[in-house]
Image: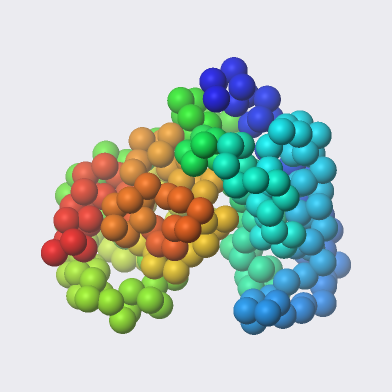
Amino acid sequence: MTLADLTPALAAAREAAAAAAEVILHYWRKGVDVELKSDDTPVTVADREAELAIRRILTAALPEAAIYGEEFGLDGERDGLLWLVDPLDGTKSFVRRTPFFSTQIALMHAGELVLGVSSAPVYGETMWAHAGGGAWIDGSRVSVAPTASMAQASISTGNVKTLTADARWAALGQMIRDANRIRGYGDFCHYHLLARGSLDLVIESDVNILDVAALAVIVREAGGVFTDLDGAPLTLESRSVLAGTPALHADALARLRR
C-alpha cells in the first residue's frame, strides 16, 4: 500500500477507536457483568459491543479487507489486507477498575504491519502511526529516546510467565542488574512510554498478536525496534516481544541469544 492509501485507512481506524471508546466509557461508568471464555479469560458486553462498532466502521471504509477480532474471530482471508482488532485489551484491568486497558487496531498488508492505533480512553491517551508517517500521540509527533547504554536504561516487563521457565530468565536477571531501573507497566502503557522516549526496553514472553500489532507499528515509526524475543519480525503467530531503542534492542537480543 502507498502512503496515500494508508491515510484514509488510518482515519477510519481512528474513527473506529473513538467509537469503541464511547462504548467502553459507557460501561466503565455503568458497570458490567463478567463472563469467562473457554480459556478462562474474562469477557464483557463492553468487549463485544466495542468490537461490533469497530467492525462497522472498518468494513465500510475498506470493504476489501478481512477482519480478525478478539471477540468474533476472522471474517475473510488472512492473506492480503487484514485488520487486527482487540476492542478491549486488558479486560482484567477493566473489570477491576484500573485504567490500564485499551483498544488496539492494526492493519496488515501481505503479512506486514503497516498501520496502528492504540486508544486508552480512561488513561487519557491515543497513539497512532502508519508506515512512513511517524508516530503520534494526540497530535504531537513522538520518538524513542537516544539511550544506548544498559547502565542508563529503563526496562519494563509485562507478561513473562513462560520466560521464568526458560534459560533466558538468567539473562533477563543480568539485564535488570545492569540497568538503571526496572518497572512493570504492562499492557499498552509501556509501549506508549517507549515510543515517546520515557522508557528504553520492553520484554514480554506471553502475548497475543492482537495485543501488540498496533503498538509494533507505533514503536517502529517512533524510531524503535520491535521483534519477538528471538529477533524475528512479528507474524500472526507471534507470542513474545522484545522492543526498544535500536541500541538497547541489539544489546538485549545478544544477551538473550547467549
